[in-house]
Amino acid sequence: MDITRFNQLVALPDFAREVERCEFCAIDQEMTGVDVTGVSAPFGAPPEAVYHAKRAAVVVYNAFQMGIALFTKTENNTYEVRPYNFYLLNDSGDLRLNLSVVSFLAANHLNFQTWLTSGLPFCNEQEEAAYEEKLQMPFTDHAEQQIADALIEAIDEWMPAGNEPLVRELPCVIDLARRLQSFLYRRYDSRIAVNYDGKPYLGQKIKFTLTKLDTNEWISEKEKRRLQCERDRGQQLGFRLFWKILVQSRKPIVGHNFMQDVMFMIHMHETPISQDYLEFKKVLQRTLPSIYDTKTMATKLTGDDAFPVTHLEPLYQECRRRAGFSSDQFTQEYRLPPGFYGYNDSAVKLQSKAHEAAYDAYMTGIAFSLMHKLYPGAFMEMKNVISAFGSAYFFCVDTDDQLVNPSTFILKCAVPCHSEEIEALFFATEDITTQATENGKVDMKKLSYQVNGLAISEGAKNYSSFCVRMKQAMGIDDLHRRLQSLRDKELSPSTNVNPLLLDLITLHNA
Image (cartoon, rainbow, N blue to C red; front, side, top):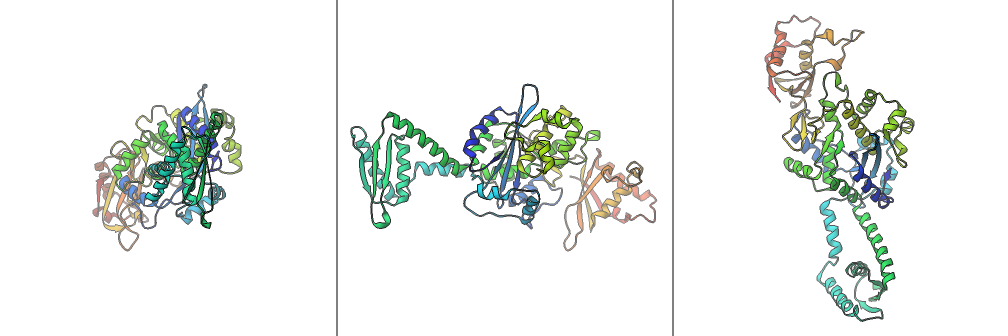
């Protein structure tokens, strides 16, 4: 279901009720950009380095689409799923777009028209507080306050005994008259009707006419004002009203490769993102105390249970395959109620919904649920352990950051070289017979190692440091012996391996 500025007030009470009912909320976002040119962290860098690189993007770009899928367990132990798709766009300020991101989203059928014409405003806690303070103190200077005080004094004298309308002419402009009208409605609980007329641009004063309301008129006017205040708050605060419901519910939040997502969420909807990494962790833990990351969960599974690919859509499809549901069975297991049919299998087959935020949130929640069903008890310590894109570590909200793979090492080379040269050393130590496919080719997914360059040397695309991840448990001494075994190995003349590198490399724990 798409939520825009035109249906937000209708959707808000339903959303609040369904958040209260749900077991968990899955979230995904689409951003106007995710990286700033020239600001990046090397592959394998710790989450703090990733944080500072991604923070540069968070402060200049926006998440313009947020998908929230609510998963509610039913009596027969199946799920009812409600995916909401929020389009976010403020009325003022600058908007920065990364052209490659825009091209990618356009290729995936993003509805730019809905976003640009119907986007919901958003704000953080401080901006909401400033708005509320302005409502309580709507006068900008001493002169305006004096005009208001004089009118309030006259009304307070008139209210107890006066039956005829109170008329006052004030030397003010239309903008102040409008603010005075709203202020008086709030101050007197809509018990008086406040009307004004006049043309200051023709040198006229503004004439205020105030009339007492009888009980029936007051009840009607109070309800009318309540609805108007709701509309005004909705137009000003927009998505902030939905965000507060989500935060106050304390329900588990599920995402995929979620670190930059939570950074955008905190910055846009809670508080300006801190320059201090540890302070951000505290804010996140306080705001969203229970987070799960499906990429983290998939990464933790090893051996025969391991997922060959942990990107969202392949992970979702593989979870469905392993669960063994037919399309009809899946539809019964994860039911989309009326108003949310757009993501059923038939609709998705006609047009891919991938990279629409609500559909990605839907896939994330399904993957989360199915992994728990397929591997009960396998994710006991996964709360607040979040995947950080390109890092060799998990971003851990409550504790020190953890290595994604304990068998992760830093290899340093005294002379910068190509990553292919280091990979060739590892490949030469592999038992190739176990990695070959039926046609004799090497299955790269079965290799026991992964090598990525870290520190780029100046002037060339060479590296002096490498992140080495071993897929099987291995200590640094074992890895050292494995590489040094090449000294005693007779290599074929056709092999492109440089054994001289063995004298130039050192291994270190990550």
